[in-house]
Image 1 (cartoon, one colour):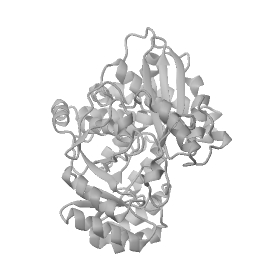
Image 2 (cartoon, helix red, strand yellow; image 1 turned 120 degrees about the vertical axis):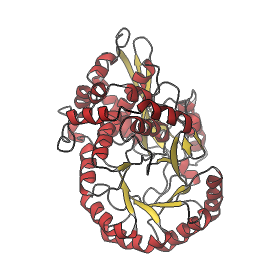
Image 3 (cartoon, helix red, strand yellow; image 1 turned 45 degrees about the vertical axis):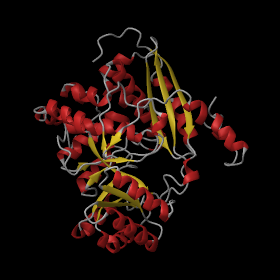
Image 4 (cartoon, one colour; image 1 turned 180 degrees about the vertical axis):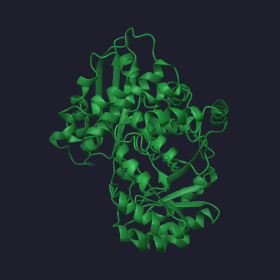
Length: 456
């Protein structure tokens, strides 16, 4: 914990609506999100001595303004508090900000409220890592088990893992930790790519991107599916042809199907040997996912889900029910690092592989830290585990993720890799950023609604 509290009183929590016009190129398009503009609510938390932490929560454009306003309403939980005090009893602070007796009505621990909490807490974790002069993954890996566990709220999950069990689990994985840290710093962590498979991409671009990512060393390729079986078969067959039988194919329906429809659709895609079907049905349908997983097990197809799983309680049920064979935590969907670590601990106890969801704005930057910590401190293996990689918006970060030979290289700079470069907000802050002003003036996008005018 931080020993020096001087100057760490939080004096400002700033938030901006930042959007990128990715819909113009079909980037990020899937069965339900047909025209996303990758965006985020971007938080800067500042202390009395000028230290800053940066955090964000990912969105798809419209609606970001609602999260921005929610974050502004939550400033009261931070302003005037000493950051060192927050970190000393982080679990208590987490419960306070997620369970305010009035604010919790618009959650609790889900939806807009939880996305707002994630952005705020991401900025606090970034601040803590910067103050300790460590990348976040090393901050977590270097913590004593008791200290790390003290940041987690175990309410509602003690039937799977208790605080005491978590401490013992972490202690049991201490042997070899330094060797594992050395290994990831030298070799990195394996990645898979979704960049080849957006639904809005042409067939010629699909082939071009398969060729590109094969040359970059990728062996795992994910394709978006779910609107038309004929189209899915054609596109997935093409990818299978381009990458060859020895490479791995995954498919992602982004919640497009009913339970029975998912089963039948995937049985017909089974000859192409997909490793998993991601989000086959409603992200809230725990038992539906379990039914799908059981039906597809004879075909060698697992179920992956979690990017829109609302909180640790939903994850608990997915893990307990057999509804996910691949657990896909998201760095901004649930309550930041505190809650995400509880999911890793449950997944380890229940023997489910964690393969984080990434892409979007800053998600690749963040989840690399979480998975590196998992390897060092929790699962202690990379076998069967991968981190998603999407080549979007990395150029806007001061410490962007680096992927070489299909492996994430371990971040070395202090923080959570969440700080935008100077000028990014000025250009892409919505709708008054210079790039947006040009596009709106040229009629590329319609004028914003009155409610969207939240950026000063």
